[in-house]
Image: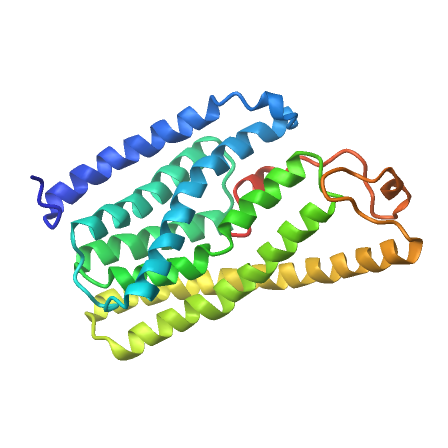
Length: 275
């Protein structure tokens, strides 16, 4: 049986997981999604987001489990913790390398992924605090299912529907709650009441606060989008034009903001600027 507390075995398993993520991304890129009537240029984005859901759902479940079971936040990492931490770290490493290879990265994407690598690797090295790590990532990832769903609905040509409005507004709300409330609260509580080596505090707190700053930048953008959506709603109400749930009302063509064919996300959007 492999002892996952040793650095050699952790590095070996990390290498295996990185290769597994590479295969997962490669397999996803070959999925036959053409029958969903998604614009061809958007297919690579949609396939990658299928893989992204694996990490997002994992840490949402782990965060809820920690809250329910009441596990101590500074517990030592057991073998299962090491596996999840390596999954997290190798995911961001592989995603970063493959995105750069496709030349789709941007500075926000690079900073975000580098900070995530530091947080994951530091928690593995220090050998404890994985529950606090799960809770912090839970706050970061709580909106992720709706982030992916928003892109899917948009690419299916249903942007001007009640379904898209519901998914988008839920995503915006959860993003603000997770990034502005939950993650800062979990991070503050942990580092105020638990002792850890100074080097760990620095390597964890600095990346977390960098991600917090990035998050606040995007929260401002989200608030601007919410205000824009409110203006769109007022225009629809003024013109007595309603959205349908699962199809586009032909009358939306009369709205000033209607642009016809859905725009395909550019390289910045493909790299998920709302990290």
